[in-house]
Length: 130
Image (cartoon, rainbow, N blue to C red; front, side, top):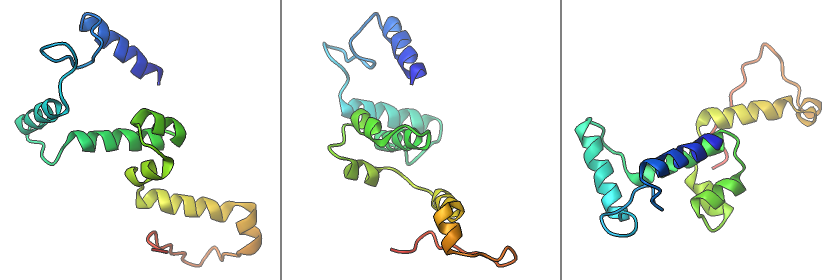
C-alpha cells in the first residue's frame, strides 16, 4: 500500500501539486467519459481490445483481494455500499476454489471425518453446488 501512496505523491509533484491525478482543462478533473475515451484510444493504438475502465477497476480490486487485503478495506477503497456488492464484483478462479477445497480437507475436522485413500483419485467439481 505504501508504494501506491509514494506513487501518488510523486505524481502530485509532477502535476504541480494539483488536487487531481488526472486534471481537466479547467478546474477539476477529467470526466469519466474522457478517461474512458483516452483509455480506449490508447489501447487501440497498441492493438489491445476489450478493455474498459471498468475492467481495470475490477482487475485492481481482484488483485487487492488476491494479495490478502481485507475485504472491508477494499470496500472502502472501491466505494461499494456493502460487502455483498463487492463480493459479486471480485473474480474467483477455479484454481482458488480447488485450493480452498484442498485446504479444507487438511483441517483437523476434515481429517477426523473423512478418510481418503492416497491411491484413490479425488475429483472436485468447482461448480458444485450451483
